[in-house]
Length: 314
Image 1 (cartoon, rainbow, N blue to C red):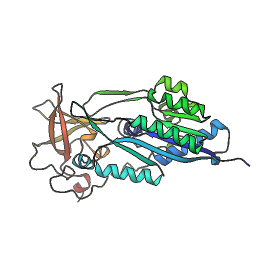
Image 2: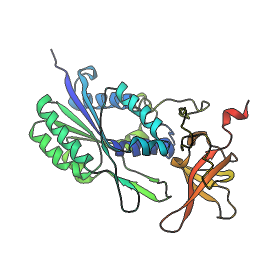
Image 3: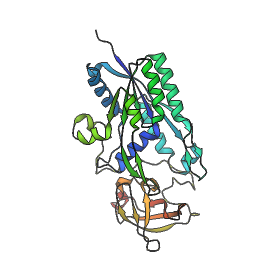
Image 4: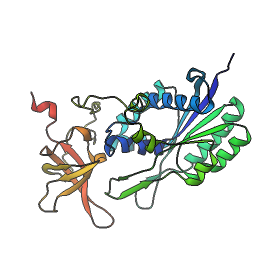
């Protein structure tokens, strides 16, 4: 009788978040990666690599590591509810979460510190005690090479899921993500996911990789009641310097607001406060704040749609 092939999955959370955003806002698929679909894909591919029945491949552990905003900061940025919803998804798929606080940077931003080290230590320790047959790494950074080498000394197979892609960030700068070639050369199995998804676009296994949604149904996440004055309100607080205009264009994961004074204003999907980007349409009336970047460029800070699509039909 064949034994179960025991798999553990370890997520570099920030990397996975960027991948999911890419497929949601930039790739023609326009959908997020499904955790359950991804786990089914992993089991199927591992079974093919090992040469056993798919039912014998089981994910016995899954861990998600990421830097995280404080509850207050997340609430002020209108992200707290969405973070909690994603936590519920991870919990429903038996994914254990590991969070570290984000640290402030000199330029006023926030960055992760120590997340990759924590992932590596947990993965190696658990591989020793639980004796995984294989460990799946969802990451792209060459910093994980020492982990892969240590896992190899234990006789643990390592499968790497990597995506190569580019996108524009909230400051309209081109961001390129590439999987470390040195990391690819160290693992037992490498899956170039961007190629597989585009090549096998219509296969059932790839279809299950994405969250299913109807294009006619709003994908807006319902917002909880917000405290007076919070950013999560449907409309901007009275003490903010707010302008009013209309959406000029909706592109990949960004667009422009009509603004004659500033030759139109760039906005990113993360600037939207009360509507999902996929529900946005040219001509929609909006209220927005503007911000000046370090290089002197002006763009939207926060954007509120004045009238939601469902309200227009009432």
